[in-house]
Length: 487
Image (cartoon, rainbow, N blue to C red; front, top):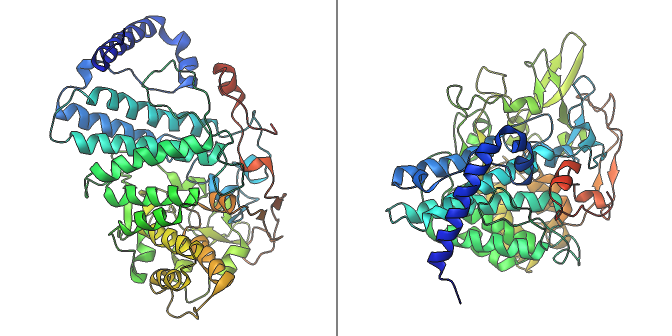
């Protein structure tokens, strides 16, 4: 006999209540194991989600997981703040630093040395979003549609980041869609041992969640929360990664926020303005108090101890007409050692500070513009692509030549993407989805390109290392989790 959806939900709630009681009684002995399977901080009960205020608190809890150490909260173990640049060609390992994340930079990651914190923290976001979504079906408050949209967008974003790190990207190779992605978890079950599904299935779920979110989320939410423009930018990125060019354009066209004008670019990164920001997390000393900038360096402009510096190749790509050279790269030195560096200005600090405590910028309107330009080029709409590209360049250069056609236009779009989003969570994924190798120049870590270069300079496009390994601990605790090939 078929069981009604309402009865099924009631049965699930009973099961989750039982799990709550059993696990609390079990105490701390089982806590680490369950955290590794699908991390969580606490179990919710029906009484936790009743009023509009309860659901507001619930969605804030889901957002707060983004600031955990392995995600955007920064940690020496690796996080989304630095991983995409550390692995790629935008930075050089600094010899004076602590050599944090060296295993990523030198392509020496293995199941015993991988980004375990990120994996757990991303699934914490997912667990909290799923918990809220489970109980919101019985909620009829005015803010339901917006809260549900935010939760589904967060769930999609976390899965998107996970599959970008551990799986192939659809445009990366012909077999990508059929290869293993990650587990797309939609149930708030802390004991789940989910199996990986195909990359194609993961992206299908991402699109479903983001499409719902784009249709239902508020055009404007408070700072620290997603809104319609942010979700449409994520949707545009997902379609771009899938090679669905027209859909990428359509989603980008739904983003109404203007990109930052030239005069605002420097101030974005010291929090004196928020121009072009679609989704950022305020990082105040009285609330989060996260020194996220230590992922790149410590000290001031005369006592700098850098972990990584801007690669000299990248530094040379910024010409003097480009405001991003001032906004992104900071001339700094360690006077005690008589060394000068091209330090990374993003995340360095607010005006007069060098503590690395700035707001966490996650989505900007500039991405929608560059997604659109790339998709237009891929569709053969070269005139439109050049016009779209120039919307960005007009706000970055005092003058530029422009007028590119053919592959030169494609290369110009890719170059501007690299220059715009340097040290901003994209470079590794861009090279990966374009099917390009990582090729570093043999420059050192000092400001003039001398000093000590990174140990390993190249990673072939065909390397299995474009998909990171799962940690041994995760594999041990989830028998359904299959390791990536090559590890």
